[in-house]
Structures are given as C-alpha cells and as structure tokens.
Length: 353
Image (cartoon, rainbow, N blue to C red; front, side, top):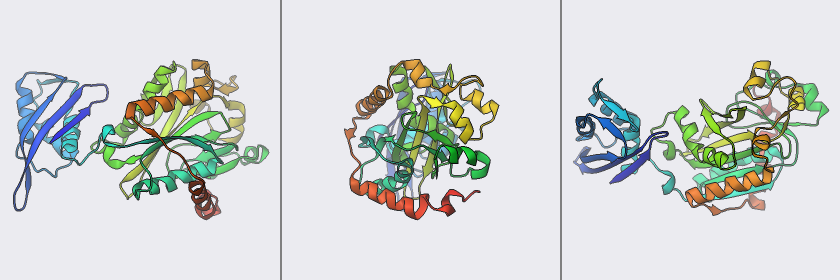
C-alpha cells in the first residue's frame, strides 16, 4: 500500500505499508517512510518509522501523528516533513484519505443565474455528487442581479443597512456556509464553489483545509500576475490588501462544499451603503476612506474579468485533468425549487434577525 502527501510549503512525504489482519485486529507492518525532505540525525527516520510499526491500522491521521511526535527528540531537526504529514500519507496509503489525483473532476463555468440560485446550487449540486449523479467539480459562478450573500451565522440586522438594500433593489441571500457578507453585482467579483469528498482533507485541521483546498487558485493568481498569500483562517491577500475569503460546509453524507469570493472591481461606496463594515475592516480589505472602488484583481492584472476566469478554468483543468461539465436546465429548476422552499423564505433569511 502506497500513499503520498505534499506538505504545504514543504516536501513530499511517501509511506509504504502492509497490513496484517488477525481475527480481531488489523496492524501495520513493513512500514517504509521516504521522501525528498531533510532531517537530522538519520536515526530520527528510524524512530518515526518504528513508531508506526505494529500500530492499529484503523487509527486516525491525528493518532498516527501523535505516535510520530512522541518518537521525536528535542534535538531532532525536521525540514519539509511533519508528523501530521506522515499521518496523512499513512491514511492515503490505507485508502482512508484521498489525494487530488484520486478524484475525477468536472470544471464548470456558469450559467448566468440569480445569485440566490447559485447559493442554492451549493446545496443541491453537492447532494447530486454525494448520490453519484454528478462528479466532484469546481464551478465558477455567473449572475445578473445585485445581491448580498450573508454567512449562515450572521445577523441580518447587524450586518446590513436596510435603507441601502431598498435603495439599490438588492436581494439578500443567506448561504449554507459561515463567514462574512459578500456584496455581489454582475461582474464585480469572481466566485467559485468546489465540491469534494471530505476524505480529501482527512487528517487536516479546519484551518489547514482552507489553504490546502485553495492551493490551485493561489497558483492561478500568480499566473495572472497577482502575488497572493493565504492569511489564516480563510483570507486571500496581496500586498495591496485582502482579495477574498473562503468558507466551507461539511455534510453528513461525506462531501463538502468549499467556496471563495475574490474582489475584481467593487463599488466600495455603494457597498458601504449596504453592508455595515467598520473602518478597520475596510482597511483590512485593502481600501481607504477616500477610495471609491475595491479592485485588487483588475488593478494588479490589467486583465478583463473574463480573461482571469479563463485562466482559472484552464489552470484547474490542467492541474487536475478535469473535464468540462455543465449545469442543465433540470439542475437550475431543482435549485429554483430549493429557493422557494428554503433560501427565499423569511424563516431562512431572518433565522438570525
């Protein structure tokens, strides 16, 4: 059994192992740990390997990492390898965790639908994936109406200015994920949803999973000329300030949705009439009181939004060997029905008044 894990910012960790099955237990044997990492002294590798030899095969990545950690000595130096990385490589070897290469992806662009329908599709399409009607996918949203999409746990009254909502005819949608409010007008930002098995992030903490799932878009941003970095827990930022943020929802069916919204060219003055944002948060988003627009991707790339999206789609397609998928009219109708029964209801929108 063979498993590999690339430590973020580190090196490749490779683990080969066999499993001995007894009447009541399954234990690890012939554990081999390798990779292009660095460590001193050499004996540390032996101790890390021996910590897993004879261990229960059903232990979690965290339990494996703890065993490896306890085998290390204060004088050991590890570079590019972590106990957590060893635990994840082990789980992948045992088939309990997945890597990107284990997943057959679709990549989808659009279609143009109201923002609330996009919000609903984060739920309905994830159900389709879990029930085998659709492959895991990355989908870039398109929309035609102005909206504010608030986080699942945000208070309507605390986050929004009702006068601004009424003035600009903005629809308020509450999504299924946590996080902050998104001010969405047609063409003002780039939003994508990623639906994957939760086994892809097995062994990672919630904080680690955010950066892990967005590694591809950090690479894509670099390709279009944006020097971005991840700011824990869930922000993507550049030298000019915040670009966007991520949010997740993990379902009991073994799948999850992870989505990101990044600013392309936002009317900051209008946004402040709609969303209650303090001055400190505005600074954090990369703008100043005299600035009228938040445009980190437009200003840093000089590219049209459509060209940036094409670059994102191409990078994901090439990196993960994804095929082009589509949203059918039937998919849209199911999402529209979910809007009527859930997302457009007073009970859902104002569940935290």
